[in-house]
Length: 558
RNA sequence: GCUCCUAUAGUGUAGUCCGGUUAAGCACUUUGGCUUCUCAAGCCAAAGACUCGGGUUCGAAUCCCGAUGGGAGCACCA
Image: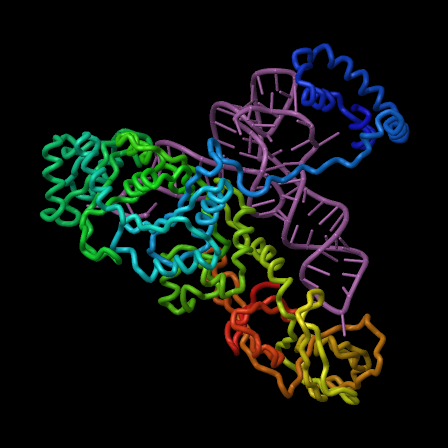
């Protein structure tokens, strides 16, 4: 072993390492460390005296099997295993609030939870967490559904938290009767102040009978803000969440599905605790800003003697320079700095889709981030790289020129040319009608020198006879030269003008990037018109783009 | 301010629970090469990390203590 190690590390080894290896493979030596370490030191020094060649010969003679290449460590596929999870019995859930458009952060929560259900052959629940009528709208509910469908996420059960209002009331009353909850009629500011100063208020002294009466009064008499139901936690707890948090409050706004049927609404903690338990959720994964709520949720369920699901937490996912929060996006829309929630610069699912990101790429990308709780500010590069692999195989290759310059080619022997739609995969061919007038890209035009040759991709070589505002050249029959600039081109006669939109980072630091959207007027082949909207294209030597409409394409990535 | 979470290459992570079999694995990026009628994809290679300081131990990325950086909570939002 010493020889092997020495050989692998340039002819020298160290006794400590050999000792470690021995103890690692043969635990029975662990209580005899002192005895064997002397031997090891001796062996190591004798091995170190051998030359590299001698070591190699020694290995070849006595331990030839050691020369076999080392096996690489196998990387775990997918998510880490769950403790105490039984095949077929895992139930997970994704509970978005329908209060905005779904974004990459939703995708992370949905994908992690759904992957676990899949991994254990369990069930996956979509639960619209709609307990704040003021914030929720049908429009968002629908957008979330559309986004999830696009991601390819499937649910076994679809429900809304508000389906269980009667259950919340039942459990709420039970908590009151258990003395675990009370009605508080203090002012909002005082509640907040007391929580900060860890002091109880008078309401917490009230008896069960009074609390029951006040609960009835919450149904009609009390106005919003007059009274809330609070959990009897511990006002002196270090975890501020435990300082008698609100379980129910009065909201008079119209709920988007239930209208004005209820005015007492459960808070997030109450709703999640009861729902996860009642729905049979075994494992609940949420982003880590909820970590402090775990204790509360367990306390509520303990008080009610209800089953507790296991909880897991993961870091929030954001892209550098791409804000996720409505607080930031909404003003941008109002100021006209971005067009809408589907603006390709945004990390919403709709924007990602429009930009040409494939759902499979998002899934792979999110899985590659793992379940860490360390903050993740992922660079968009990583997603792009996953996406490129999906998109490359079935993107049609088309020619597109930007900053077009005219090129006239004399002596063209043909009037049309057939060009394959993909270099490797059989995606058919297209025929391009040509005459002597072409467009080429401005950048290419600039670098062309008079008297040299260029190759028009798929067509042939051209000897440049005149350089200037317009370029002229002559077709070279049977042009053999291939070590010359190869450029893409578009026939002038049928060139189709489109707008190319190139999204860039929205924010640099915390400043809005005024140049975050570049627009180019470009020409492409008429074949573009025959592509379906939403199709991914690779414009040769430019990059991958998605057809947004007949006269607009969005740049996906290089 | 109080409390909690977190820290591995330029970036994202695996390994950490249960210290040794890994002088730290993978992916992206970068750089070189091969291939190519694209600056794409594919193939090969190189470069590059355990935040710091103590402690425990024969042995620490892994356990303990402390410091520092980053994030979160202290809402009648979820």
